[in-house]
Image 1 (cartoon, rainbow, N blue to C red):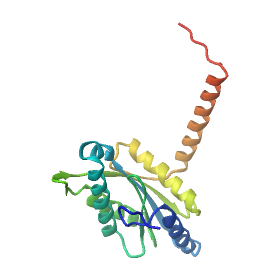
Image 2 (spheres, rainbow, N blue to C red; image 1 turned 90 degrees about the vertical axis):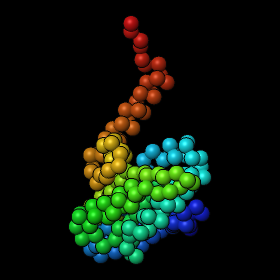
Image 3 (cartoon, rainbow, N blue to C red; image 1 turned 180 degrees about the vertical axis):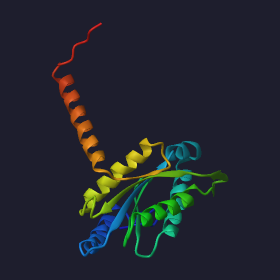
Length: 191
């Protein structure tokens, strides 16, 4: 149930904890799911090797833990992706305050393998019950919002908007149609 590198809950345990937290949402509470992806993490692996990347992941995990309350949940989903469940959200500013704490913590320089590094994160946010009441739906919506934050220039955050899902479905449909057209020889080249 725990990630061997960071000792944070893994994806499976995180999902179980999210399901439990969602039961409180059904009783009138709100929660936020934050999906975090470290920006330019590949560059750390390329310059300091996987050991440097691993050390950075451990440092980020410890910093994330330090930003949360006892009732909140943080997990490493894999690679350089983390997720947070913020429980008992009363207003959007509760979430943006947490995001600010997370960004401040992650951006602070850290000493790794004799190098001073600083990193950043793109964060997507989905709210329950407004953006979903099922774990997979909330994670997908937070992930879509995170890609929106990356598209905005990285190092920022975005709340999920229904249009994000509609755009993704339209793009998938277009990609499918284009693949079909290529396979069926429906394109012509004109010079």
